[in-house]
Length: 231
Image (cartoon, rainbow, N blue to C red; front, side, top):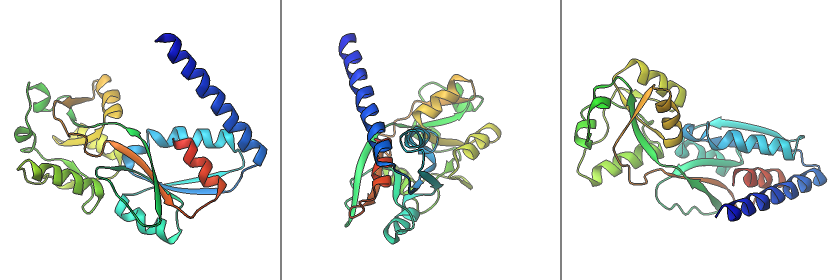
């Protein structure tokens, strides 16, 4: 098993080296414009940008934050080259290609001193009695979470705060008795620092998959390279 992992690691390094050499050989520059959801900004995007600039130092990367229902018209009009977002259900879009980038669960969190953080066996019924920092109304995330709850007989999340910023959400959780949904890796990082508590609630895979979307008739090599950096 150890030998197999080592072999896979060596193969990945060889493939990455070939990838970098090919990009340098082509002298890729150009500009790639990416829009991404907030929950993927601190996870997938930094690594992809780093790999892109290593492979093609002459390139320029512009990254903006938004939600899918905002970003799709910009993609279709050519204002941006790519969307990086979380999805829940299959989405077939005419003229748009897509690629799965992996899976990371969404978890429910509260500040470490929240009353629910001290309880065992927290239920959805208990969690939904508290206010939440919610995704923006009309966003794919908001629609997915509310549909998930409705399928289980619950009403939508309550709370007077809607936020797309992960940093703002984290700060609000420190100062308000709210709950929120965050990517598991980010939640575990802050839980390990004693700032957050991850509640034992299961989102059943909602919004766990990350995907990128681009116009299928685009053949720009800079955009293709960035897509490879994401994968």
